[in-house]
Length: 182
Image (cartoon, rainbow, N blue to C red; front, top):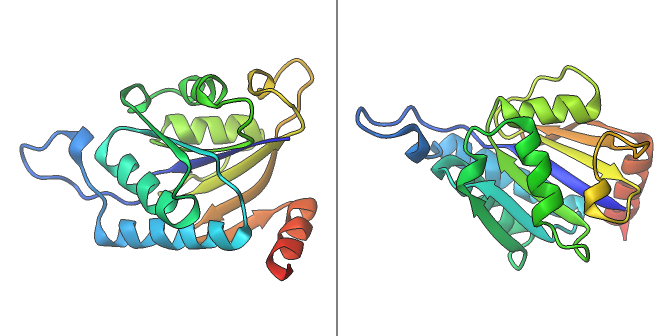
């Protein structure tokens, strides 16, 4: 089983007059939401092995806030190539940069690419506001097969918005309940 968490960065400020978009940082509200989302993911008990994020300030800060709470020892990759990347670039990063012994990856990125991938993999039109996390699972045993083709299935198991679970499938909810009670 392989698991991918796709996350849109938390709320960023408008930036200063001469500041590049790449350098825009999280607002205090954005940082708080990223932190709350990290605490929720920790309570859910999802073991994240690697965090991959766009190197832009707002995505890096979002990824660092979540990683610090959930998985401080996880491998961490920052990529310039994910800055405003299309959906396939995010999917490719998950397959290319995750080691086979790693079962769960968190990817933090930007709209429209991250939202496009969430909608493609879920096969739905979803609203992907800042700090949204979509958790996808696939029964595959190698990362190169984590895709929506060749009969391999990817399922949206949980959707988090505003640091709250807004949707989860039954099997995910049951496993999460067991994990929280244990």
